[in-house]
Image 1 (cartoon, rainbow, N blue to C red):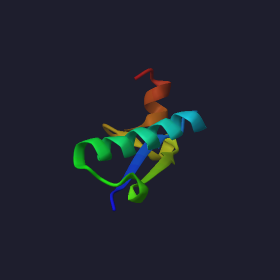
Image 2 (image 1 turned 45 degrees about the horizontal axis):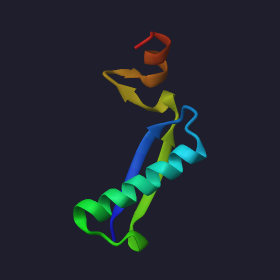
Image 3 (image 1 turned 30 degrees about the horizontal axis):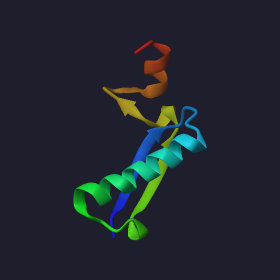
Image 4 (image 1 turned 120 degrees about the vertical axis):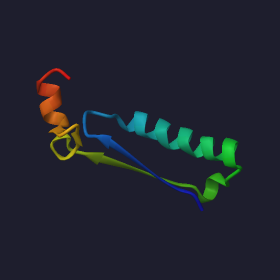
Length: 67
């Protein structure tokens, strides 16, 4: 049973976009690894930009700084 955890920043991702990610990820595992879609688990975690850091700065700060 494949388990995929997608982490994204919480910045207005729609339910439709999440559904597309879930379907696409499931299909990728079917196509590449021959996995059963009925037993493939995909979880999307949304992380506040204050809690996600890149290069020593939070994503919130990077967005404020235009990076």
